[in-house]
Image (cartoon, rainbow, N blue to C red):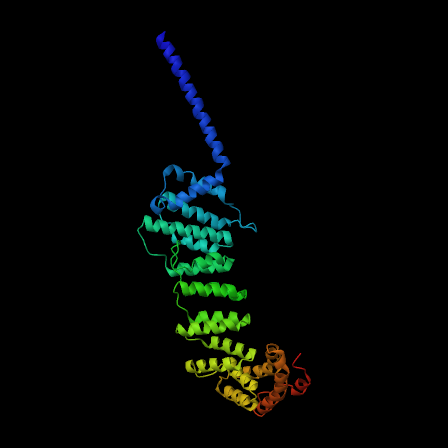
Length: 391
């Protein structure tokens, strides 16, 4: 009887434990379902940081990762709501699965494919998260202390500029970053080109500050983009500032840079700056381009030297190649018909009438000198003299 009583007591205890165990399972299941977002962020943080900054984390945690990862991001194509695109999200999951679960580096092709498929800001956000995880894995598991090569940063910056994720693009220019990126001036050019397309001087200044703080060397291509932005936004103050900085850095300007600077200066009617830039250009390269030659001719007109302006244009015509000579006639037409109104608009009110009268007198004199050598035959000066250039 005692044996039977003990058996019944044991059954009651076991049943109670079973009920308690099942109850706990239901409780934890409910807890996970109701707090999946916060749990995912917690697990993702541990998966990224791990022990002593590595990618390592406990096995019971990583078994939940694939399921919870799917709850955090939509698998549909990117929309205006800012969801990541399906292709990028899939590559993101696969690469994190590789480093966090399989403990192996994902194929290089996966990362390059992810960069190429980025379509919006959320895609770039996932890209930078993957880069940070890959850097940690290389450091803690492969003992690779060096960053990724600069080609990767170049493509990452290109992707950031392409989708307008400029906040991440600027992070890629930091010399010491957590993403393993090796910044370069070529990477910065993508952001500067974005600023050029959008006439964004604020972004241009921010990028130039980042270049200085992170000791990235300026190049001739940098000057090309920067001065074009300054010209398009009519910001001569920045031209003065950055010209000095480029010269101090030993940058040799390209012909296209001198074209931009000299055309900008003469459009403002600033002959002092024009001749300073011309002096710098003459020290670097002897022959004039079509643009710099006509900028000097316009400068001579501003100084009331129409005969010298005609002589310069004649000399320019003789030095240009046969393929470029037709451009001289086109530029003469632009000088006569377009430039006067542009330069007058940028003068002080009290100076406009005097300059307009001077141009009205000197431009016909210059054209008369060019007619003798057949360079202004298409210019209708009779109509021009009747036109009000001050309007």
